[in-house]
Length: 165
Image 1 (tube, rainbow, N blue to C red):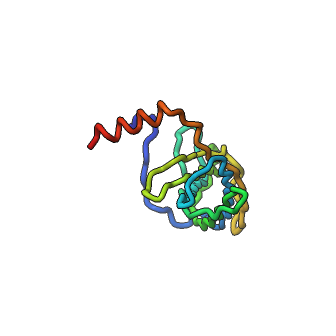
Image 2: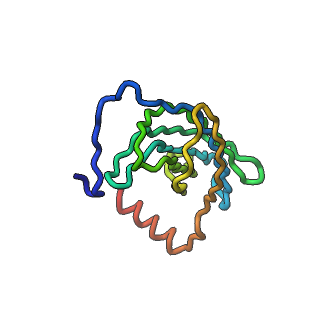
Image 3: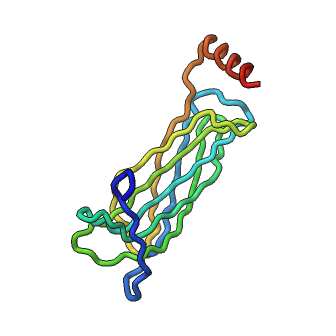
């Protein structure tokens, strides 16, 4: 048992169980709402979980896929990140289970020194499981901004850096 109350029950793949294949094309539009340095880059990522979830036993039959990339940002401050996620999941037939797809997507602003200036991670609720062999296109929009900083904030940061060295 884990702290979340869920357990991972690994079992060998059962021969003859249907396999669901397809592709998810996910587009993340990133609205850059603050002035970040010119050397800032904007990575993005997505995780998809698909299959059947038995809501009585909390057993998931299916799979988890991930992808990541770097957004290109235009002069208007809108970044676009397109991720292509192929999948092949084994999905047994379970009358007590709910078919579905859960998508988590993220974007960040990373400075030239590798420090994260701002990031966001969002989760899309349970959507319908795509049809076998389908290409499913999903699009999401996120915003990245840094709240206005006061001089006391910068003095505190300077003090923090000075005391560390």
